[in-house]
Image (cartoon, rainbow, N blue to C red):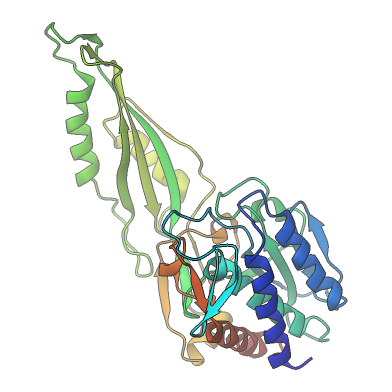
Length: 355
């Protein structure tokens, strides 16, 4: 099938996906539409919960494997929508709808690209496509659950809106629950160990603290106190203050190293990471995928936003049509021509690397 016709079918698939609710862990209907695509093109596939995946027809275990991944779950629409978030509306070259930009356009573009190469023989890489669930919630039944099931992956392209430029690194995330303790008492009595007052010094420490290592791709680690909670009534000094600390991790540290540093140095009574699995990710600048993209005129950058790259251990590149600034916004949209261009760039990039 000509690439132009394949592209139009991909856009039609995206319209179908938009018009089915697919909040994280509720992706049954969109998974069914993706299954229909594979059936239409006679592609052998497997559905594992709400993840739909396939390998190229001439898969060869002796060759390295390239993962093509994007997600079909969405966040819930916010209250500022003026258009029906579950209706695919085309106006002035824009396709509106929840999940159109994040990451439906990327997903259907990768599905079309995988379909284009599916029957080809003698590829230098195997291809594995995973249309994954639960990306937005970092849930247990998303891409992370697929890694023990699909063939071992050597390198990955993760479809997220990057204006088809190359996100060669992505910050990881660790969320910490921290506790500052004091002595509980009646507000009318003297208390030199007020947990709320003790928190002033702790907050200043977090504000001033800098991790030593910075990288060219991702800059410094960014640490932010985002929540604070204490007290039950006006006349009781609480015994502790609870803080939430959001840490965006560059590629100079593992999440475990970040946790060790904060647990050793921070003045909190206790600081505990909720999870260490959402690590930073990157791909070497000398990797052939990056070199091919640069040769095609694509720029490179480090991304501050989290994606399914975080669960991958292999080198990975974030690349896709659409603009990250539109994600999770009211009246979300993607330009039709961004999808058309995205498929062309994906195909050309893989032609330079795997053919």
